[in-house]
Length: 172
Ligand SMILES: [Ca+2]
Figure 1 (cartoon, rainbow, N blue to C red):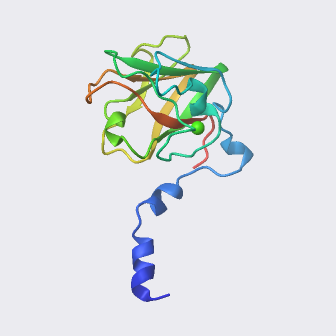
Figure 2: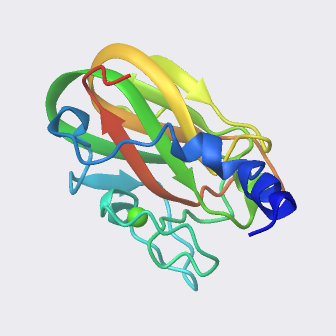
Figure 3: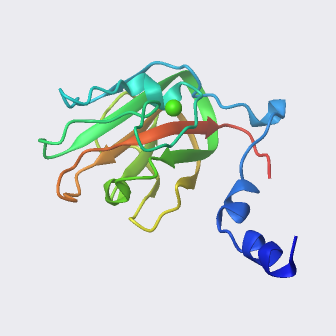
């Protein structure tokens, strides 16, 4: 392999992102996996359940078969996962769909001890159209519910992401 090819491989941005990704250590358990999830709306011709964002499949591909999707005709949308009990939430990762990137712009992520699909609770972070395909946020807050909320009109307010991973312990 030539030197120039190696340099190109090393310059791929995903290399840095993947070094941040959790692996199989028990201390890095994703506490959102297979937990009950709900969302505000659905697109009738493009039905994608809320549970697809906690199914453990991180595929962010074009047809979004492992991704949730809310309806497009609403002033705001939300998605929420119930962790079952309160945890100290350290970090979370939102795996956005790699197409329709504009839809990640304005997505806000909240942690809360009470079920409330509104922009309330503790703001862990928000995304812009420049946020990476896997966007990490730090909560450092005790919560039972994680809510993603969107009322920024990017042509519509629909949210379309493929997985939300939540980690309660420090692992960096
Ligand atoms: Ca998924």
